Image (cartoon, rainbow, N blue to C red; front, side):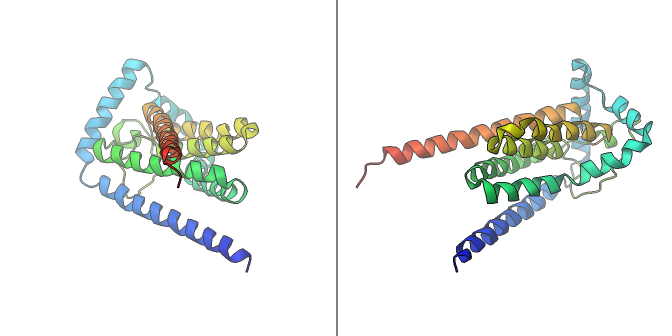
Length: 228
């Protein structure tokens, strides 16, 4: 019987995460309906910014990958199986560091909400659709093909590294290697622009900042209430 409350807590937490991600998937799909023309126009603007900043490396990076076919399949697996790492981090934190889990879960939820706002307001065609000469390496055909900005593949990998760092700072170097690898993969496969990655860093920073601010405000409200 001792394990019953813990089991119920695990089941409840799992059900919450499934519900949130299913809801996110539905809204994410809705954000991509009928926006192809707008997404292409936004991509052209983003490309012009990258050219001005000297960051337009997507075509060259993609051509490098196509010239080295031995790296193509590892890149595809890295791109597609990132969720395994996310799930492992969530389970590890839930079981071993529940205090950190609660904090980083809040950051993740905020990232989901903020990302949806951007997807609805700034649809973006990925390089594989918008840049001549890009070879579509991964060939993803998901529900929303016009949500390149920001990159959630990179954003989630950043979140995973941030979560591990928050729990075990000594693992920081190993943890941050994961998003570095994802940054390379999403660019060379033609799925994201360099500025998409910058937007993902901002997304995590804003979500983490809002979560810390809200926690601080909540603590101040609780301590300011008169006792009794």
